Length: 349
Image 1 (tube, rainbow, N blue to C red):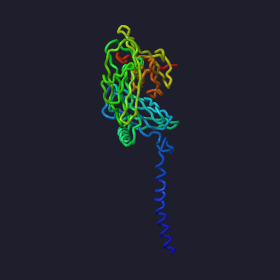
Image 2: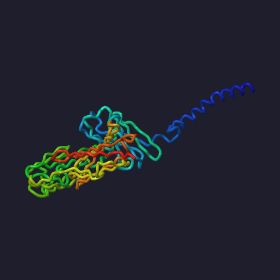
Image 3: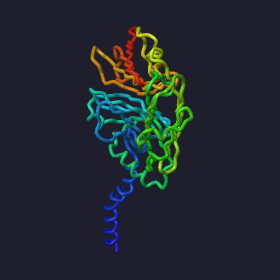
Image 4: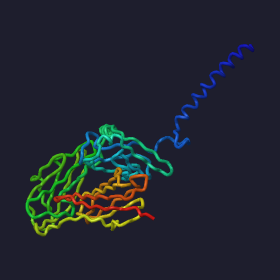
């Protein structure tokens, strides 16, 4: 009897470490390591994707999207291309940013893009998920109903724009993030209250109408519906003037107001004015000991009065640069691109 008890006890002692490991392993798997301390699972970031998701080329606009914890600071880094591109929280937990690929950019570097989220004292990063958009498309096909209306973008002329008298073009593009797709037969375009749809060129991607417009102000009203019945509408106005009176758009940086020595403080806000609704690109290029470092860039659009503003959360580099070159480019409809340069120096005490 004593011998049998000792045999069972020895077997139980041999199995005890294995049992403890089986109990402890799931608990350990629930925690990661952050600066040497056990913390909650890496749940700040859910997904980081980019569109377009195919072959990249210069001049193409990229859209970064990050799903993460709400109310945090977030930015994108691309090795050797951009650093600290701010991600705006467009809705709770959804962060977005745009970037236009430049000729000198290494397009292969975008595969190594990372997004960083700072929430309180915790910071986490995630690599770009090149398959993320495909998952979104599959999810969209599985939805029982598309409830997202299409978007009307890139209207021409822009709101408040000025055209010279004569034959001119009114146009707009359609974008539908849902699964149904735009119904071209639903497009309705009115100019000055008159239905001109039958004279317009219509496709699932957009609408175009060419005519001779008289002097003065004109209005455009456009509506489109997707195949799920969601409707989008947009109204805008523009002016037609004699060629000699056509306003020449300008580009002006209103703040900071001088390129004299100034103390750089972050966040850095830059404001300006240009043609109404012009697309504006602002690039910061740090310079240290005469050597340029990777830049950071933001794209925005001027309002109906031509005013625009961008805000950079942090410096593009860790060290304090000698100065930062600010390059502002405004794409004006029916005109050449406008460009302004500003140099902000670091104050030397």
